[in-house]
Length: 445
Ligand code: 5GP
Ligand code: MG
Image 1 (cartoon, rainbow, N blue to C red):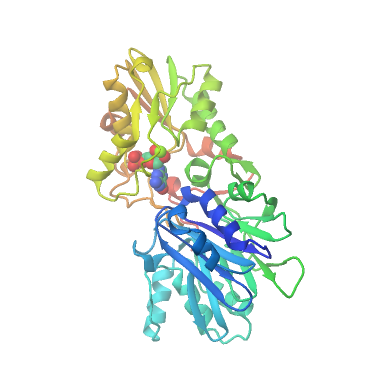
Image 2: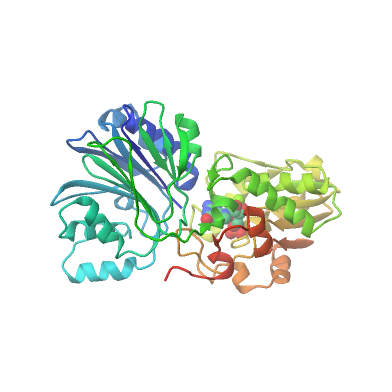
């Protein structure tokens, strides 16, 4: 996942980056960083922890200048040490540079091996460090051409912000797998960020999405920004952004995430009508879809399970034992509401089955008569290699069990998933999506 932001030509650049990262905390909670530039030198702060923990007035005071880039980390490639926090910074032939990356390179290991064979020394485990090495080793005169050369070598899903002393480059891969939006700030500056929810917080006006295959250049020596179409676009935005990652108040490629999620719930209700007393969401990820299911079916919506907001996402603790514990800490039922009822419970996705199994136990323990689990995405049968932290085949329950076997495992009275076709229809079937977790079509070769 991860979130990136770039702010250019703003009197409060690092503060705008800070608010933007705060708005996108859901995309990564492990580490965060901002690198700013005042045209003469780059200043940087990065650390493990949440945005509000890492940055204080002192840190923001240190991050001077009218340009800044920032990053929230959710580890997909690399380890969990602070060395693996971004932006990555280096000093090379042309001076200082910083890079922040959202996505995953598929040939990162090969490039790294090649670079190490040639004598490169790596500071981190992140595939993003390859990009800095490639830029530093290029023989081109200008940073722009060095970046273009590096982009010719890397393959995968990426949104990048690259900052030199006087310029910011914003780049999106030709498939546009991860979202990336461009906006204008009230003070005339520009912002690029992973999600538009950041714009709402900092008062930026949405201009458009960064185009798949596009490089946008913000340059202090020039008015406005320059756009170069580097690669032929073949748009396939990640369907999982709509299903789970993005915040419901974000708009991705012209579609409201909230509206799309409701439509997924409606599709589930149409395809899978259930005779039930209540529709309840798994909070928070199932809320929008459960509303859609309730509206379409006419079955009343209730918040039958309450979430404790002071517990992080269940995936953060890596061991299975801790994960079970965390679900318990996080969710608790409203017993009086559930007793004797036939319940449709909606969640956005089922990965290992941990959440669903626990939820069903909670509901049954509360006296629910029937529990019908509806997952408003298809079965996840393949690991994503394009920037989502899905586990290996071994851990993906739907890669190893049939729907009926999963139903028995989670002890639901019934279990349904959306089909790939109805997922695509819910988002909008006029264009293509990255659906690798569902169809195993690893289209980036
Ligand atoms: P499970 O418990 O089946 O392993 O995972 C399903 C739950 O995890 C769902 O409630 C879903 O909202 C959430 N989820 C799905 N994908 C991700 C992810 O990439 N990261 C995190 N933190 N949670 C996820
Ligand atoms: Mg969830």
